[in-house]
Image 1 (tube, one colour):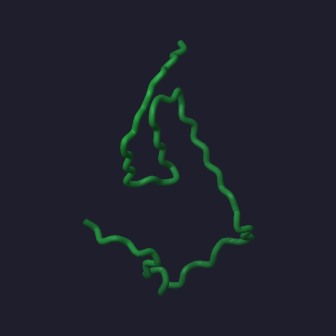
Image 2: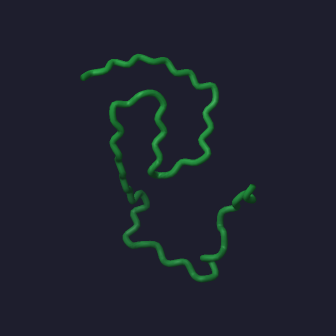
Image 3: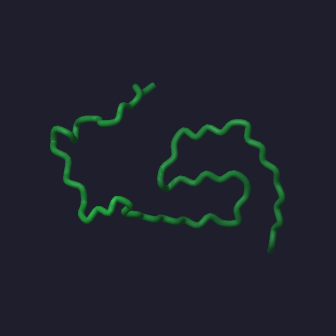
Length: 68
């Protein structure tokens, strides 16, 4: 069975609280969503990064907001 869907969508404001590598944001209709995962070595690295020292492992390098 074939469906033909015509729609018009107007979005005044869209707020996304969080998105990850496996997130899907869909606006409108889709017959199917197929997953796709791609991994690129854009830096040309030949080996894994070294492990963090114990001192750096407990240090937050990214300033995070206080939880509410």
